[in-house]
Amino acid sequence: MLKRLASFFTYLMRHYLPDAYLFAILLTFLSAILALIFTSVGFTKVITTWGDGIYGIIAFAFQMILILVTGHCLALTPAVNRILVWIAGIGNTPVKGGMIVAFVAGICSFINWGFGLVVGGLLALQVAKRNRKADFPYLIAAAYSGFVVWHMGLSGSIPLVIATAKHGQNFIEKMTGAVVPVSQSIFQPFNLIPLVLLIVTLPILMALIHPKEEEIKTIPEEKLTDLCGDCPNLEMPQNPTLADRIDHSYAINMIFGLMGLIYLYYHFSTKGFDLNLNIVIFIFFIAGVILHGKPVNYIKAMNTAIKGAGGIALQFPLYGGIQGIMVGTGLAKVIAGWFVALSAPETFYMFQFWAAGIINVFVPSGGGQWAAQGPITMEAAKMMGIDPIRSAMMVAWGDQWTNMIQPFWALPLLGLAGLSARDIMGYTTVTLLYSGAVLSIFALLVGFGVL
View 1: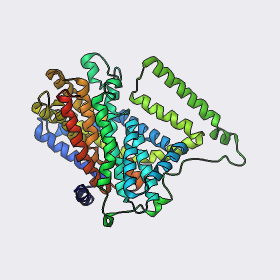
View 2: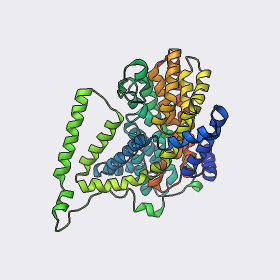
View 3: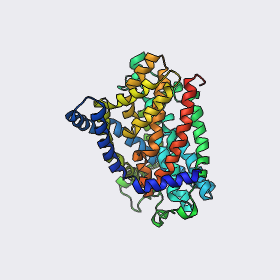
View 4: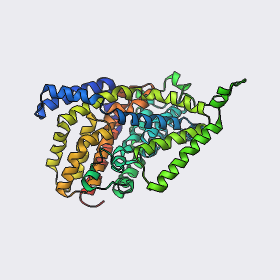
């Protein structure tokens, strides 16, 4: 049944889903229309909030690009690449390949969302190279399916924001006067148990939805010789100049990397396990610098990695405009308010999760969504005597959930694979249905005090 369902959604997406860029434009039109219908603002207000929002999230957009490219650079190190080749050997059949890709992508997405996307994509390429009968879009979809747990992990925007003192969007600190360390959000049983369950069971789901033989699309020939831009390993010229020696100097890289390690030691020894967004970026940057060995190798890796950020750079302003409409006109509060009005204390978390899922389709940015939904969620939690930390994590769950039908964050993977969103979204729609059921059940368990 699941295989037929995946086949149906794949047909639907390939025939009717527009390009990701056009999807963002159509969402802009839809959000503007909904704002005119469900809020009291006029056309001028919709246009001005849209225009103001387009470049209103530049700082956050740059942080997201840095997470992506530093994660990609780390994935391109020889050490990480050797691990990927070894893991790909385990997936020695098309079905096993999809299972291992989803499993590894889930673990890596927990560590860092950018790292998970890129590692999942590179592993899918390695598996496709070794299994010429494997369905290539299916493998890339398996890699993207692992991304469904990212906001429950170490690079989750919302848990890191509420762990950062004096952050403009730390609504819990504004309400209670205290920051929330990740030990009280990410590493609590209510978050860890569904996280582990999804990571362990997603491979089984992938095995059940592998396409029929007549529906298989194999990896293109050109991708067989260009799997990951090749891990950078530039050789010193025969008659090196002083500039060449500096470019290839291991000593410079190691000294620079050591400075980073000393800073990280100082940070964690003085502030405890303070794992905020900037520190996550810094960790992956320094790790990549050290593991690439030579400065010139890291430069080449960065030149490769930055290509995957093009779609994000193009589309992020569009989603900033949508966010401007959603927040500036009050539409996001209206949508969130509908779910608050329907909530009882026991169902509050589940409805916040669903509301976040809907809002995420329009604002596929954890930080942007938190800016829109966070204030009303925190105010409602306060009025109903609901735990604000769990409420915040329900927004995080919803934000990651509907990414499975929102092509924005699939752009780096699609760039690596040379595919379009319509090639993979049929499979990821099944992931959406499954993960939504799992997380809804756990949100209810949290609401009834079981977790």
